[in-house]
Amino acid sequence: MIREDRQIWTFKGVVIPKTEDVITFGNCPIYYFRRVCVDLDSQDLPWKNDITAAWQKLYSASDSVVFKLYKEGGELSNYTVSSLSFPTDTKSKYCQINWLDVFLADGGIESNYRLVLEVTVSGNMIEKEWGKYSLTTWDAKELNNSVLIRSRFNGRMEHENLDFSNTNCWDSVRFAGILGDQKPNSVDDTIISYDGVLRNAVSYNMYTYTLKSLNENDPKFIKFIMDHHLIGSAEMYVTSIYALSSLPNQVELPLVCDKRDIGTVGGSRNISINIELKDKVHNIINYR
Image (cartoon, rainbow, N blue to C red; front, side):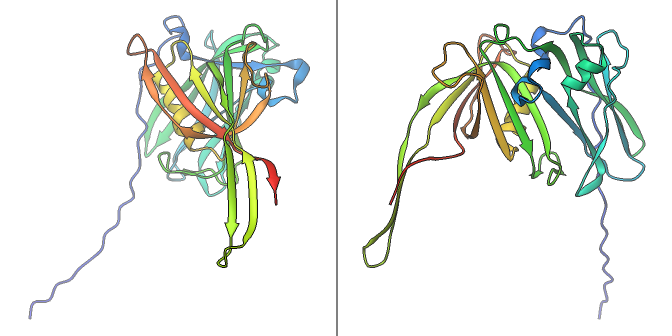
């Protein structure tokens, strides 16, 4: 008889963040800047006051991340970025930047910013740039032909290996684009019992819309919109700032993504998106 001793070994894997080349402010193309806005006169309107979220997966008590917001000159913003723990994964951290608070903390001046994450994972220390931002005050004329997507994350994002449940984490992205091509789609839902008797009938309109981006966009920014806002969000609101639109202008619409498409126009860096959205809430016309 041959006796075999078998053992099971398990190993914990970690993902070491990659060090990326950082483009300085002076050499950065304009489309790498993410525009963020604030409005002192309408502080209660979320689509006029942007918010930015960032996060980092950590694995042990020795891992760490520090969120830092730098102004264009290289000095730190007077606004302190608070680090928050995920309720279901207290080692990992996220932050939410309220740009109105940044604007007020730095003296009410429009400026450019860099959000940087100083990350230590398994003894490896790197500096990761989350994004560059151009902070301006709200101006309807300047923002004409633009779209804001504001989303809440409240589920597991498998590609991030993070669970956003109970975080109430919000993020907004603003870019040149048009929300239009509104089409009403009448839908009839009927319930008929086994004996052929009509028990319930509901008729409602479910509008569809087309969202198209304009101008050049950073490919990483487009990927972030597609992966997190259009797929990973629990709630998504879209606001169109377009003077000639037939849609309600400067009004948040609760929408969900139906179809997604990414293309290039004119060159490899000219990334465009063409998205079909539909109403999240149905407008019931008839119930019998």
